Structures are given as C-alpha cells and as structure tokens.
Length: 106
Image 1 (cartoon, rainbow, N blue to C red):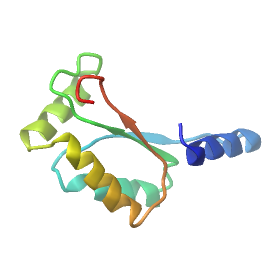
Image 2: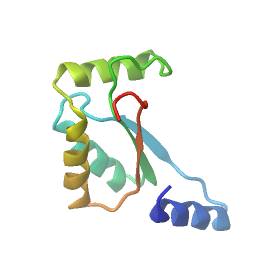
Image 3: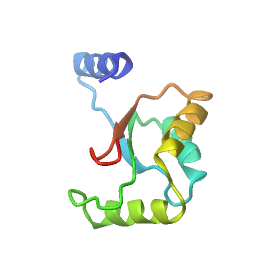
C-alpha cells in the first residue's frame, strides 16, 4: 500500500470516519472513459479508487465485472493503457488508486 493511502486510512480511523472506495474496470465502457470517471468520482468525494485491470478469464470475479472486463478487452484495452490512464489522472488529481489484477497479465 502506498503512503498516501496509509495516511488516509490512519486519519479516517483517528476521526472514526468511514472510507469510500469505488471499483472501476479500466477501459470500460470505452477506453477513453476511465480517466473522466475517476476524476468525477474524486470530485464526488470518493476516498480512493480500485482500478481493475481487465483479464480475459476473471474467474474470481462476479458476472458484472467479468462482463466489464470482456467489454474493455473487446474495445482494445491493453495493460499499457493502465499507465496512460494513471498518467492522465495524475495531471488533475492525487486520489489514491489501487491496481487490482490477476497474476496472469503481469
């Protein structure tokens, strides 16, 4: 876990506040939508983002995330797009982002 997220969690615990994290499948519904979605979630007050990296056989995920992953891959999503998304988001936001993936695509 990174320092920004550690600090966020520690500060929220100290005040008794809850944390709100949102899972977003990278590249869903379209490749260019993900940065905009993350920035809007940040503006809405989300504490951190779990950015899912699509995988062709996400057996541990439920049907909604499986379908989102398949749609992103069908739209041409590649692992390299993850870093483009992060680079774009970082121009406008410092919201903590956790990358979620299977070992296979790494």
